[in-house]
Image (cartoon, rainbow, N blue to C red; front, side, top):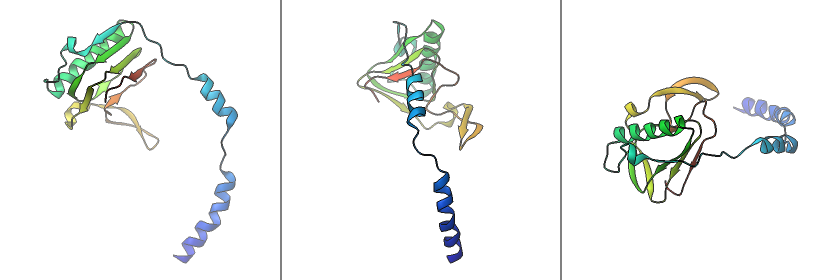
Length: 150
């Protein structure tokens, strides 16, 4: 054990001397390249596509994803989750969509593995196929999640 401690203590100066500090120039370059998303002035309510606080998680998942697809296909806008608690599975955000969770609205992701398809993702720096996260976007641009809901 003492030998291991000596090795670790001898490595620390080497590692700390090779660590890079904060790079203000690089930070400012990255920060200046960030552009806030903008969206078409159209709104799509998930309730018009079949979502309901009384519906099953699968039904709400299908309705929400259908609403997002319709919004994106039409050029984008806001997909609105109105007041209420909506059980759901994985949601996939597409380009030019702002998912707005209104005040008093809750998306409650259920534990049903069948509602989380396998998707491309990363784990510890490796590209893998894994269950979808609750909200997923892949190769999507100009997206946002906003609102006062949960």
